[in-house]
Image (cartoon, rainbow, N blue to C red; front, top):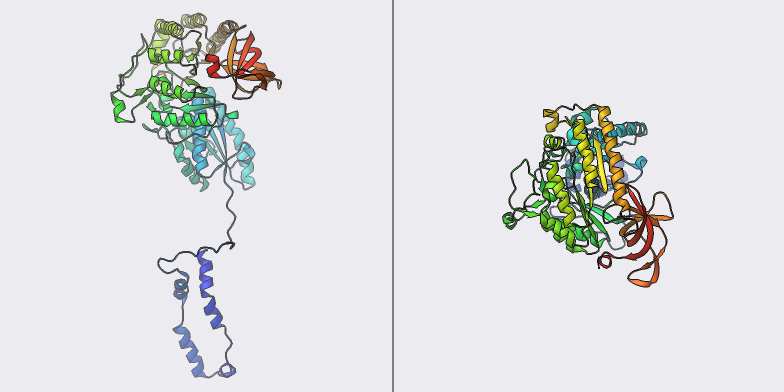
Length: 566
């Protein structure tokens, strides 16, 4: 009960007594003595302190419990604030979105998929390239009009920038047209409820502090992927490699790894929820090093890939990536395991052997080369030569027969000559990747290249070289994929094809998209049963055609990872 209501209730008997009718004789008495007597009585009567004292409960008293069946009047609970989350950039940002939502959900927020319903709009941003940042600025201009309309309707809307761009451009974001209310860097998501509370009071709020320890290990992300077939699990954050072109060490900080136990707990939870594929995430995922317990500090230090080096001293001790990969793959034999993004230097033989031996670790590796020129690789501070990289590729293919390879390439890095470019072209042809991520160089402030090198390749030359790299990559990827025609592929069904309601799509072990008809098929575990494949099922598909990006085929049967491996 509210205090003011208690005070009125306590004063009631006194007010009723004061209002009681007087006898007739008393009513007729108007003598001076009577009037003085009444004034004297009022002077010594109760004042405001009396009422307040009567309203206060005695020491140790508690509110009375309602009787069974008694209705207690209460005001309606305020509707939860609705938050709309929009993600840009890499898989780490997808995982960051899930972490941010888990934190906000515990603070009473509701999630909405409709922009117009939102009370809060949060953009999880990328800062790796200028194009990614420009997409955010363009989006903010669209939201500016929405915020103005909401202001006119007296329905306030708060906008926040999260992630790498928030850390890099805090001042510019807050001061540019005063549109953004909160800014939170990658290590500040725990602070989101406080930042939003400050924004509610009409002030801007920011936290972009980087941490040497934050891994969000105790926060189980709320999975947002459609269908719940696949999930991302962050195992480490930050990067120590300090490649000269890369902004990541400055926006996400130094490397730190989650405790193995917390990762295994999350993967087990996802397995129990029916998730069929988990991707372990990190900026340098295979340099994982858990130092959370004293006994881990005496663990052996793995060797680097042959011919590779680092800009930092070797880090002794800690449970390493091979140990984690081994433990994760044992949780559920029917769950596929992938990981990204690795650095080529961190592929010791025990990791390659484990991938080859375990049927549920995908035979697919991401080996980001960035350039095919040793001279450019040195300027990038990658820690290897063209020759060392090619030796690693051959070693990987010898160790894991049939492995699918993907890579990253940058066109037009500082000082890149036409000869350097042609060496990258020849590397694409020699390796013949199945999947590629190719971009024109975009100089970033704070990086070593920004301070030490000249961005001297003209924009039109960058575009031309990028187009040439893409053309060569597609030619070679089409050849690699056509080699699968006539062979069966194990595919994890993701759902309907975007182009045809009569077809399904999924990905094979090599992470290549596969399209196939939605038709009745036999179940390998029960040959008499006819079934239709559902998201989360494993199916065998015989490939009938291939392009640089997609395989097409016919369904053979529904199966399992274990049956397929046997």
